[in-house]
Amino acid sequence: MEQKRTPKMVRTWIKGYLFILPSIVGFSVFVAYPLLSSMYYALTEWGGYDRPRFVGFANFKYMFTVDPAFWPSIRATFYFVLMSVPSSLVLGLFLAVLLNRSLPGIKWFRTIFYLPTVVPSIATLTLWLFIYQPQYGLANSVLRALGLPDGTWLTSEMTALPSIVLVGLWQVGAGMIIFLSGLQAVPKDMYEAADVDGAPRWRILLHITLPMITPILFLQLILGIIGAFQAFNQVQVLTGGGPNFSTSLLNFKIYDDAFNGKLFGYSIAEVWVLFCIIMIFTLVTYRYSNRFVYYESDNSR
Amino acid sequence: MSKSQPMEGAVLTETIQSSRRRFPILDSIRFVVLLIGAVAMLFPLMWMITIALKSDNDVFQIPPEWFPRELHWSNFITGTREINFWHTFGNSLFIAVLCTFGQIVSSVLVGYGLGRLSFPGRKMWFSLFVGSLMLPGFVGMIPMFHLFTSIGWYDSWLPIIVPAFFGNATFSFLFVQYVKTIPVSFDEAAKIDGASDFYVLTKVLVPMTLPVIITMVIFAFQGSWNQYLEPLIYIVDQSKWTLSLAMASYTGVYSTAWNLFMAADLIYILPMLLLFFAGQKFFMQGLGSINSASIK
Image (cartoon, rainbow over all chains, first blue to last red; front, side):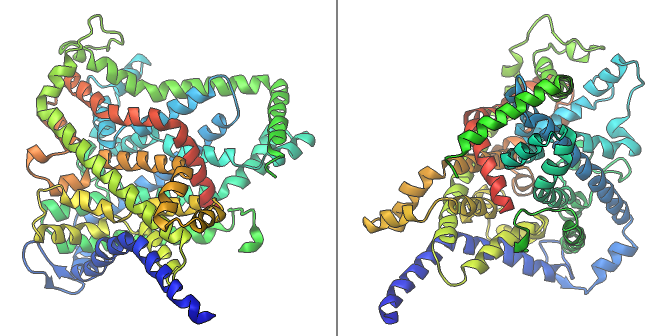
């Protein structure tokens, strides 16, 4: 019986591997190889075109003790993550709740709030570059129309990073739509039961809707953290890291060190520091998630 | 279960109506908040359009005029004459179509293998592929740059296009999750009739997974159209530039001709808008499935 099956099973195995072959090759070449080799490159002095020279942990020592741009960039990165992740989560969820129940023109509202995320990154950033333009930009025109003094936006150390965060909030629709589809998936019978009990809307929101979408909230939080730590285009197009390193996010510094400074080995060492920071943040978030994440099939955990 | 759903739907609409009767004020507030929000969201885009239609002098008018008296449609022609616009537009389109095609085909094949066929090591590969999503993109950037450069791919589109044909972990994951919601009996019925795996995939499963595939197409095209870092590090020759590179450099070179720039920028946005509105129906449906897949 078993022997009769075997050739057929082997055929299925081979077939399975043939189907996933693209990803096996892709994973080996584009993930495993660069990952393993960059573990070595992080310990070398390497300009990209010469031979890497093994220097041990000298890159890390230089990074933590000598490089004047490293700590400012860590500071900027943390500021950025702490400002952008919670604000876009809260705003996205808020909009999703507002857009969840029917209302005249609700489809139009949903489309309008999603629309900015369709605009390509570079088009968005170049548009905002002009919005923040000190004299003729929209941002200052609005302030003047309201009788307020001009803002400094991208030109001052204090306001440059918040201005970059604001651009991200314009594209909050990406998170909003995920929340919205989560809200739509909440079982209807739960609302029914609450309505029979005559529970007010805010209680339904607080005790049924929000707990039901905590898994999505959690996923969005993790993805948001990972994404925010890797912000690059914003800095490259809007500020180039300035003024005075105030927007020099670590990811931008890594690019800058590698391709403008020709410090390939050193910037790979910086990648690993970034990677460790992301891992720590993700693990800590994950660890504390079971305090607030509610799974419907709770016994499966 | 599915039979009772229309009933539930009826009950829900009634619930909404009854609560609307109870809270007409709440809904009015909601409407006003949404209206203000929507205006704020559209503001930058509307402004972009007015700037694109203004004359060179009107751009620098303080306070800005929202409805310019003369509409300078010629800005769209003049604006795209700079920076070799249509050439780079064509480059971007070519790259985006190839990348989208490659990612969808390879991810659907891999998704079928992982979701429908059983073989030893399937779970391990699945976790490896999904796990690779956790890695920051920059980990691979420099070694890959070195690798591609050393095989002579520097200043070509190959480092951008070729990887697209080797599966996209996110898309494969989505396809696996979506395919799981389709009963295996569909495959088995087709296989009893003598259909091959490839036939089952292309003729049975792909039509049934169309919403998620269209969602993937939109995301893949958007991803490629948006791509900035890879062209930035690989492509030097301006005739090979993508539109993202050209538009980013445009601001530096012609920093005063904002009306021309905005006109060009609007055309840069247009393919994404068209794709979004064309696929919107499927897109929302596909997103719904992504989300339910991600929880379960």
